[in-house]
Amino acid sequence: FDVDDTLVITKSLIKVTDTKTGKKFSLTPAQFNEFERQEHHQMDYSDFGDLEILKAGEIIEHIFDDLKQTMASGRRVGIITARDSKDLIYQFLIHHGVVINPNYIFAINDPKLGFDGTIAEKKRQAFIELIKVGFKDFIFYDDDKENIRIADKLGKEVKGINIKTKLVKPEWNVE
Image (cartoon, rainbow, N blue to C red; front, side, top):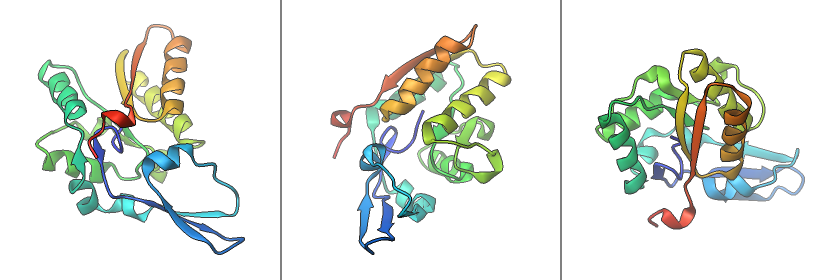
């Protein structure tokens, strides 16, 4: 499961400064998915490190229910998020009564992981790590079409694994 705009809608914003013009603006995670970053854009992701903003977010109940039902069925659940702190995600889930093995939480922008490339490429690298430890059957929920595309492609490239994807559409989310 992805986190932002998949499990929860938060007030976290990406703050952008255009260093050419000095103009400042903010993007929601959904807007960021479509944003074409330029070299002169300075990005501030600090809201995404704030546990209180995350905990105060509005849970997308039907997706969160899928997560809980998956766990209740005995299947393992993992998180692959563009955030940079696995502990933050672990604490958020605990706050909502969900305990996931921290080894299955990939905060792909954590420099300790050493992932590189776009968000979708980093999520692909997280899948590779899960495959290396023996996982072969995935259902991946994400709100970004490129992340879904890369997961679908990986499912076709790696023999012996099965990846089903579920694109979480904005109209499913409660505003």
